[in-house]
Image (cartoon, rainbow over all chains, first blue to last red; front, side, top):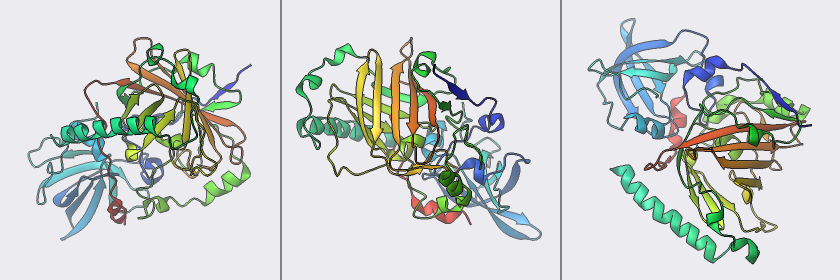
Length: 126
Length: 260
């Protein structure tokens, strides 16, 4: 008799996240048990290259600018959702929301981004 | 436009690979009888597919899975957190290695563009593209630009055939189901959280089309007695999307400098 051991009801929260796995573990690096981080600032750098795109943001904080970085989903997947290498420009004022790094660094995994025109950047996962 | 041009370059290149592989085998000679099997007798898997998490687990494929095999529920975007292995029974050596695993090593220049083996790569939420011929099937994964060749002509690897993340794959048809056996894998992750397989891991995959022909269904069983007391299987399904092609991945290791 064949026996299949099935683990049920596993990681429903992570399943709903809609992230894409890549070289490093999302579950290990990012915290889905806490409130999403939401920051606004000025784009200092934007790279749309695999394994992840990166948005570097200057964020005003206590009278000075601090640097936040957000990594995106795989750029080859994002291209199918309207992202291009010039969809974000240096100097753009944007708002980013995502899952914070578990180690407390100013680093997040991007969930959504709002551009200078107040509209979402790219299309949502669908 | 850029991707259309790339696809135009890629497709002839894969066709050339197919022709070259047919003409000059890098492996031992294939039995002539197997090579003459009519392709029309088998389902055509050719096409571009996106991972589809909405396709229910296929009972027919699961019925063929070996005993003492756990169904891992981490296909697609889901990942197990540290210390969770979805029912796999780890040998002490595997458990100890997983405990000592340093995830930040994944973000080193050396590792950031290092692909996983097919044991982890196939279930990722990336598209695949299948090119099918009579003697072999080429499976291009968008994830890390991986390319698998599944030989259908009965050839065997040479004694010194190298191990790789794709391994050496041979396939045969059992009715409408393609059964693929893979070995010669390089050691790599199983669950992306510290559990690795060795270079002696073996994989059995079964592929078939859904009843409506739109989806490619598969089970991927793996075993590695050096690391696991039981076996694992993932059910993976992709749905065909005509007119699309896999994009280049072209991993950039400079990403490693971002995580500070």
